[in-house]
Length: 238
Image (cartoon, rainbow, N blue to C red; front, side, top):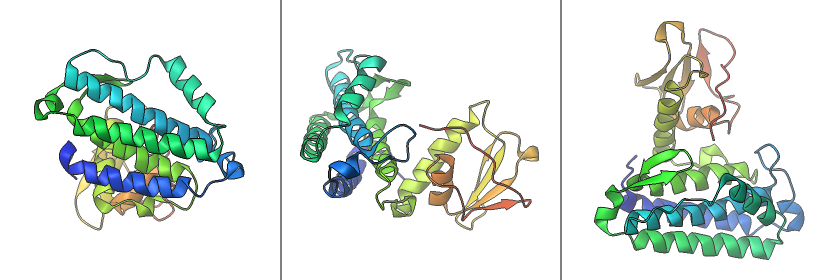
């Protein structure tokens, strides 16, 4: 899957449309229900997605202007904004989700081509501006699943699943707390290796399902392990 920001904007638009369609069905009781994220309601997830859109507007503006603009004023303010936004009534949640998505889309449209080559500061360190659109797509698709509202990893596109799987595997390969794994997907001989191959079980299945398992969005019930045994326990990933 490409990470070209101009080619991904349509995918973000489509994913946002699906997200808003789901959010529009929620009443106050629905928003107060637990999400798949520990300690967060559905209202928390929607508030996070709105503030993430605004944070990416800050990053895009920084790339466009050259001004150092943090995505969030601080970690504390990020948490406070999500907590304050979580209990809002459905119409306010939905309006914020739509408006923040529109602000994000306008910031992407305002980017001149050279600005995509800039480096911006994110919560997890420096990042090429060209990856910001992928980051928004990733946020929307994964957290849509976290709403626990009939949107599942199986609804992700195969291209999104492949890109996510490669990104997660690369991240885990750099961590000391990740188990050794050989990931074999989509019935092919193509593999991704994490850690010491000699000590690693082979986990096989569709790329989307492996990505969902590695990100904690699926128990991996459809995956197979060779030699026979239990699936390893990957560490938490966003």
